[in-house]
Length: 207
Image (cartoon, rainbow, N blue to C red; front, side, top):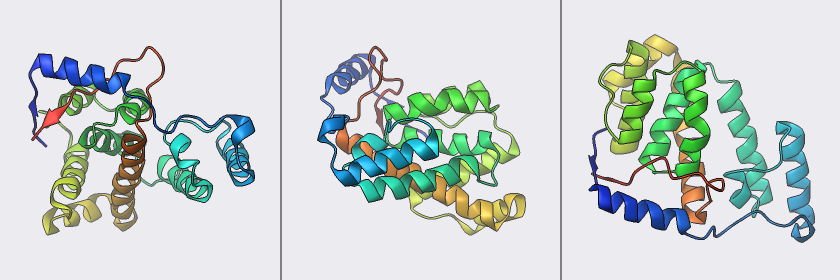
């Protein structure tokens, strides 16, 4: 995955306008929730021990979709057979593909804490292929970028993924890429805001 970074002035202008863009689907006031939305929000709190946040805020407009998306996310985040540093690596690749600021803001610290090399995180943030990756990271990078760019995984990469991680992991790698693409698309559509005072961490990219 190699991109050309826009000139600094363009980055500042686009980043500034993005930061100031109005959130189209902000949190719904508690007294404005429908019965279905309230039930979904309560179920979310029970399952995650936190109120509806981030990508689930716009998704709450479709409460059953939000509930099902949350359930899938809990599996892919916490019950995947992949090591956490690799699943978080996939999430960062996806966030970078979609220039999804909040997704990156949430997951970059988790990836670093899980042991992903800071140089790898910095390279993905800048929109370039990391210079030095271990065998597992190299394979995850190839698998994920092929899916995003080619809409498929080559026979060679697939065979290596199954040999290295197993069939379940290959399915979950595709699932993580797809799931976080869903969240990124939803937040980009909704213009979901970063926390107040946080600058967009991802510069715009051109290919």
